Amino acid sequence: SQELEQSPQSLIVQEGKNLTINCTSSKTLYGLYWYKQKYGEGLIFLMMLQKGGEEKSHEKITAKLDEKKQQSSLHITASQPSHAGIYLCGARSGGSNYKLTFGKGTLLTVNP
Amino acid sequence: DADVTQTPRNRITKTGKRIMLECSQTKGHDRMYWYRQDPGLGLRLIYYSFDVKDINKGEISDGYSVSRQAQAKFSLSLESAIPNQTALYFCATSDSGFTSNQPQHFGDGTRLSIL
View 1 (spheres, each protein chain N blue to C red):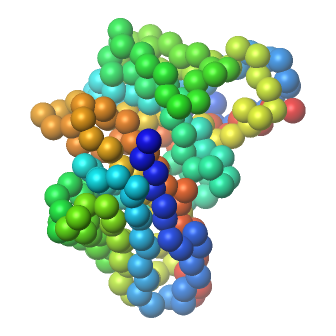
View 2: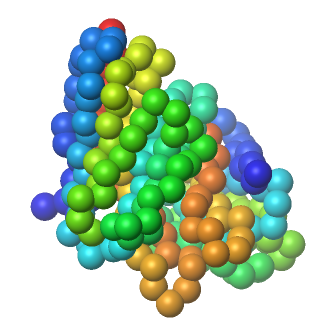
């Protein structure tokens, strides 16, 4: 079965700083999804990456899928307190199976 | 109104009780999922349904059952709750679409505590 490892597990940054979260898969990724979760709340879909080398941006958040399609990174530029939360990556491992496997998440704290 | 609504949002109950968590969606998606989230273990799939007549077990289905009453409704039952089923439960939906890479959309979760 596919496993996703996220690093770091937690991150504390000062407001205005840039940061990167990584998601590494044990198998080739056929679809990589980034979600954000506020404590005790639901997951909010951020972005989906499908092709090796693909890069997408939403406001100050950029996600990339590497060429070999086994790792994705999420980069936040000029972080703000509103970026705080848990970031999770989810992946589909291929075939006609639409189930997702999720990483354990990265807890981001942004200090004002 | 939320596209994916879970009820109740919080529930405290005793060991041995039967519990039903409900999920309804207005997104028109045909696929629905139930997950549980535990600290240190992440999200784990309990059951999933691709349409009303298609229900499948996920990785941790023991102790749970589901019912897909309609395209928009998918409920999760714990027939006899036990303390290690204490967790945050999420319902999610996705569209079949023309490609397989449709993202899943989540409800706000049900926090379930079993004493």
